[in-house]
Image (cartoon, rainbow, N blue to C red; front, side, top):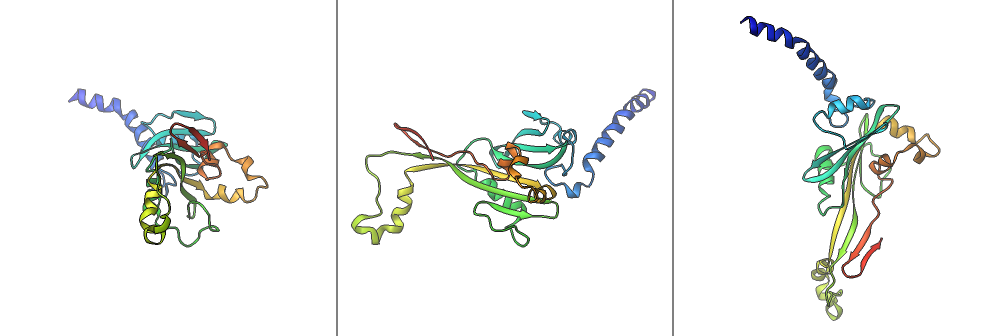
Length: 230
């Protein structure tokens, strides 16, 4: 019994430290902005929230992890300014055929965008919440052609009869690979960008990707011929 009491007393400092860590991570957990983090968190606190996951990229203003979302390998990106978290999100590691599941996941979590949405975007979906602007988009990166001796036309003499039937067959000779982004941005930071004359100079490379400002360059692959930039 004495040994048990002694062991418990010895563990008290460790247990106390663990409780403090849990409290710190649990602070206002109902209002986490991205995963288990909040805007303004330091890089150290973000790393603590990802305890058990080792970053494969770590700089003064960036933390990048690897993660799977709905079977898609993604980068989990956190970006900072003056050691304060201001943007985060998921980026596909490489083009895949089913990257559209990222868009489906965004709609599943946030519903279809309605109400207080910024001016209409030509690409992607946008949600505006009190503290966060969410952006999700999927786009074609690679088109791989399958060359055959013959290809379907629009129907020739039978165009009026076969238009609907042939549409899918025309596309069947092409395999498409997609990239996707599912990003969260501190709304205060987002609004500050509207007050800057040259907002691009304020953004890091990852932030440009998270906000859909830049995308992976597309290309078409034709077997036996080569790769053609789009």
